[in-house]
Length: 107
Length: 112
Image 1 (tube, helix red, strand yellow):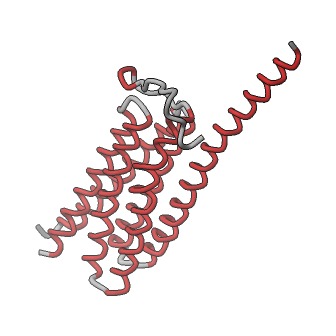
Image 2 (image 1 turned 180 degrees about the vertical axis):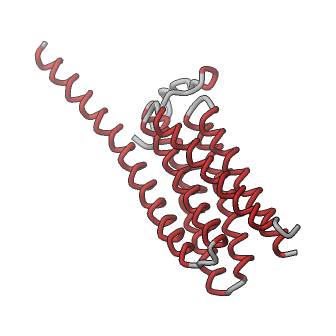
C-alpha cells in the first residue's frame, strides 16, 4: 500500500506512452489522409494525458498549462485538417468537370 | 484513500488509452477507427486529468482541468465523432468490405 502511488505513476506513464506509440504506428501505416489525421488526434490526446500524469508525478501544476495549450492546438489542427480534406474533394471535382468540358469541346 | 483513488484513475485511464490505440490499429476502416479513438481516448484523458484535479485539490487547477476537458470535448465529440466522418466518406476513404454504401442519385451530397 505504501508504494502504490509511485507504481501507479510508472504504470500510467508506460500505458500512455504505449498508446502514443500505437497511434504512431497507425500514423505511419496510413493508408489515407483521414486515417493519419485520426492517428494524429489520438496522439495529441495521449500527450495531453501524459502531461496530466507528469503534473502529478513531479508535483508541478505547470504541466497542466502545457496540456491546456496542447488541447487548444489539437482542436485547431483538427478543424484545419478537416477543412483541408473537404476542399481537396471540391478541388478534385472541379478539376474533373473542367477536364470533361475540355474533352467535349475537343469533340 | 485519496492515493488509492488517484492510482486507480491513472491506471484505468492509461489502460483505456492503450485499448483505444489498439482499436486505432486493429479496426478495418476509418470510421470505426474514429469511433474507437475518439470516445475511448477522450475517456482516458478525462480520467487522468480528473486524477490530477483530485490530487492537487486546488480551485485554480480544477478550473484548468475543466477547461482542458471542454476543449477536448469540442474537438473530439463534435468534430471527430460526427462532422468529419461524413467528409471523409465523401472524400473516398476506403471502407471495410461489408460497409460499402450504395450511391443514391436522388439525394444530393450535402457537403460537396
